[in-house]
Image (tube, rainbow, N blue to C red; front, top):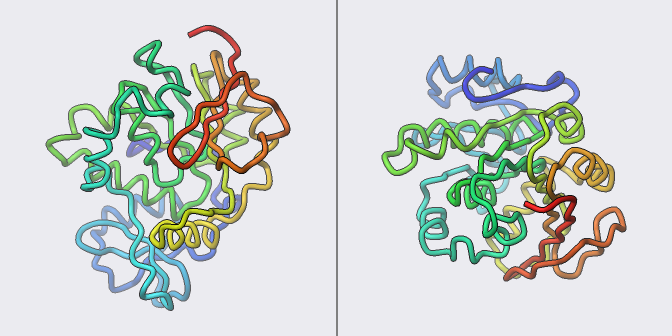
Length: 266
């Protein structure tokens, strides 16, 4: 365990389009060493396409040819994140009901497809202890940097870092090696149909950088084998059940549904 990151497997097995930082990014040497050690990310003289950069004292993901894309980052203290945490509905949110936080506080959760950690932030804010699993080095580095800055934020430092742990690993590997949690949460990549231009841009980036989740069905099997209490799968409303498995129940959210597979009572 180093810097809040547990690394499973080798970086060579976890490929990305580009694993480089801009050479003139003025990134502190200590952070460069951490990124190299944790994720195999190096500073390179020039980059093309998707890459990490250092902007306003934070890591961002950007594209050399897509200036209108805008930077992508993990910011647990952003206005949107803070508003959702404080006024988004709390335990009345569909994800909280699906995971079971309305029935039992302090659940342990593995978020096996962590992405930018937005759902994990909601769960942690409601008392869950969440292990974030991310296989892509660029996205994992964004999560790591978001946690680094959360440790410096007066509103987050006393609770959020203690409730979030980052694991850099293929999801299937993590689900075969981590201790069994109460709940395994899956949100595999799926073609987006949201009308929001911002969401479309972000999803484009994720499809380009992270790629599809061809092992999503296998993830369900591993998740169900590991979880002590339940598995929760986030799906677009139009999508079929993951792995063809009918859930115990489904809870409808604003833009998605949460399929819940109950193994034992909470």
